[in-house]
Amino acid sequence: MNYTLHLADSALILSQRNSEWCGHGPVLEQDIAITNISLDLLGQARYYYQYAANLINQSAETGGPATEDSLAYLRTEREFKNLLMVEQPNGDWAQTILRQYFFSQYQYLLLEQLQNNKDEQLAAIAAKSVKETTYHLRWSSEWVIRLGDGTEESNTRMNKALTAIWPYTGEMFLPAAYETEAGADVAALKDLWLQKVNAVLDEATLTIPAKTFMHTGGKNGVHTEQLGFILTDLQYLQRAYPGAEW
Amino acid sequence: MNTTAVDKNVLYAYLDEIKDPEIPVLSIIDLGIVRDIQLNDDVLEVTITSTYSGCPAMDMIAAQIRVELTTLGF
Image (cartoon, rainbow over all chains, first blue to last red; front, side, top):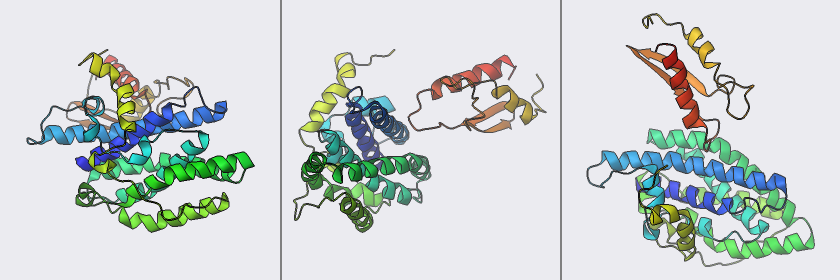
């Protein structure tokens, strides 16, 4: 159940961050692209939250009743298990697409693995989601190359983005206890991820920062101050008018 | 309505009348939203899937399927 929440939370928070671009994209086509990706992620989050709610409601110990909405809107920072990387600020377009690329490359490899998980529901969600993630990966990797190997300004911005985001990439491959329990092996994804990422960054004429300290904690509820601001926005209505319905 | 002998093709034809809310020339059959129809005793089970995970029209499409089939006597 914790593993399902981790998957849901990462998708939800990244969706929320990406949606901040709505109406503010650099060009119309990309405004639509990033918000579509946002919606895909939201849909995936819903699948995971619905499943987690079922698990909670079926289990006598963990308490309920839970719904996809109570899980998204009524939990507090320490209960969220999303990756630290997805709660970081959008920054400029360079930073946003770089974050998306790092996440989508990881998510693609993870979902491929998850399709074979012993939990049938997780495997089913993974099979459905990987089709969308395939596109997210293509879209974001192409943007990394386009901006990295673009103008002097775009290259500078990409390097700045790399410095900002790289310290959050390590967390993806450090397993939390609940990941191992659920049969997910994220450490095994690291080499292939690095291989793919190196190839793309190479073509984008960008260099990976050397010897960076990697931030961790998100998977276990210890977040950066960013998450507080995100939740204040996301959860405002339910907090101000508890139990509000249409 | 006699529910013991239901022709699936007839049911698919009825569901073909339900269109995508945004692109009304396409039906939910065209879009591959309807995956299966099963008749178990007196219960008609229609299995649907979303075109993409975040599709907000799914609740509406599910409701329309229910309305359509109820009107037909199921």
